[in-house]
Image (cartoon, rainbow, N blue to C red; front, side, top):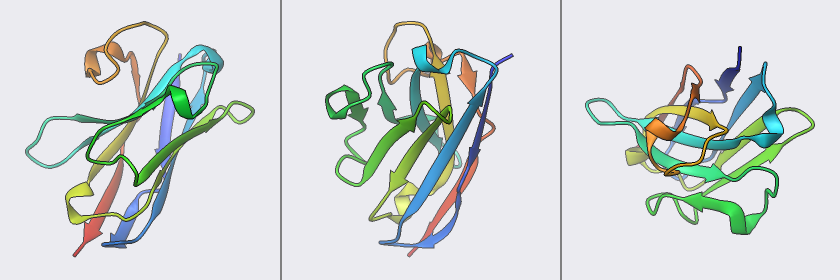
Length: 127
């Protein structure tokens, strides 16, 4: 059974940085597309960033407009982990952040594309 476990959330002041980690186990990690989503209170879960499967380079990452230039997604296949470096954080970035994985094709920004989800980690940005 595939499991994704996030860590690294916390409370930070506006303008600060956090690095989220997602550890994957129980699956063939290297063939997955991995993504980050977030959900703020009272709002739907929204796409943040994703990286494609085995060619993890700048051209194959994709970001929501709201985080482009501030967030960077990366992965370490040797550790079965994916990361989200978040810089220049804003209060509107406050949300529970989830990592997600899939081996299926589909819309990268659609939650329905992803079969596996972590439990989420809270990120709170104070003004």
